[in-house]
Length: 152
Image (cartoon, rainbow, N blue to C red; front, side):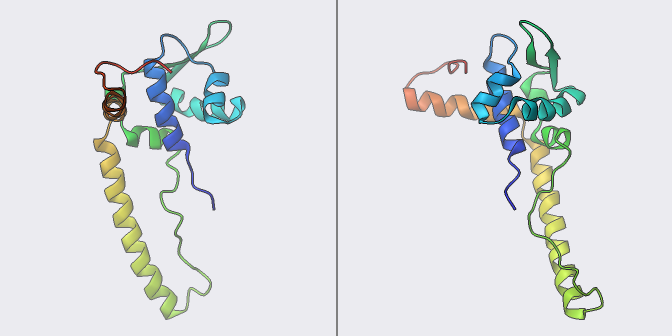
């Protein structure tokens, strides 16, 4: 099962959008991510519905941030994407009467539930602005400059 990269990709896009002087088209985002514009529009629509993005149609239109990055957490975007499954690990249900399967599933279920709760709690603590700041710091170290990085 391939990893769901939507959270990572949308966080990436939001940081680029924050640096953009104007709206960003689905085509531009699709090119950046190596995806189809229709897939981008479908994914971005969930973020728009949640109020994190706005969109304008027609010439000069595109996607814009609906609120500052400091007001958007990783958890917010995770939810706007439909709260995709965190782990690929699953429980076996070949024979629910099997006591070994029951014991294994109980242990795995408890561990996975605890891990997911901790991860989602951490997602609530981190904003997209925190990621953008980390990026700016990394960029400044590489080029030996301070100040904002160039727009995408």
